[in-house]
Image 1 (cartoon, rainbow, N blue to C red):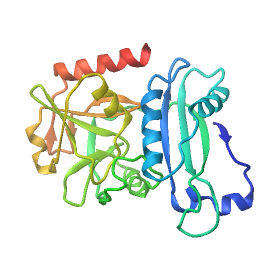
Image 2 (cartoon, helix red, strand yellow):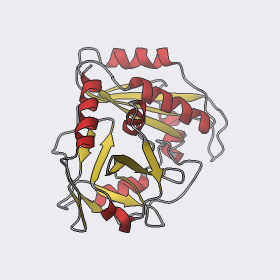
Image 3 (tube, rainbow, N blue to C red):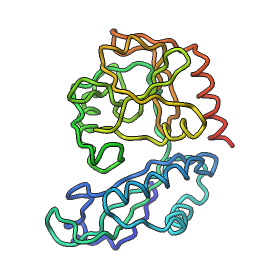
Image 4 (tube, rainbow, N blue to C red):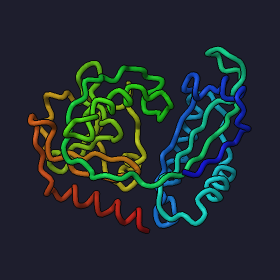
Length: 264
């Protein structure tokens, strides 16, 4: 893994680091494909919007790209991760500054097969409207859910909120298909509004956002999970309770357009 830090890594600096102490920041996980970052503009827009919501200063796009490009020189495939957080000041929850520091890492693409079956996590997502949609650094719910997968026949799980509505999987957003319509769970109280979903809307696909109770999933014909690294993948079943079709024209259309974008 290659790493760049915008600050001097001293013991004192890390002892008051707000990303470590409080998760006071955001991150983006960006696909590097054939030496390019095809979804960069969507990641950049989300990062800037998130910083504004958290009361942090925006950073220079040219500066960030310079650091990323220097780090990825000679590497054609991988995952670029950008972590932006409030500059460390003194101890305590109150952030004394709106200025930010950042870390960039580049790692290999994740290995392993993509799962087409999901379990259901016992970890319920809590509601916090002011954090809903953000890819913030507070991800303990996902950590707990991922730990449940150890020794399981599944590699990913559906995550529900405290009202038993479906929200996302551990690391992916959800798109359900019914007839010729696309549906995705509302993310106004919890969950991450992922770049793959943003891409889908940018391509002219209409997403109908709604509250979806777990017990109603049998009403849908198809089920896609998506993120910016793995793209769009069809789910065949959720445990043994719900089964879905994979030979749907909308699934083929979305997956083909995704490949065209990534490879363009």
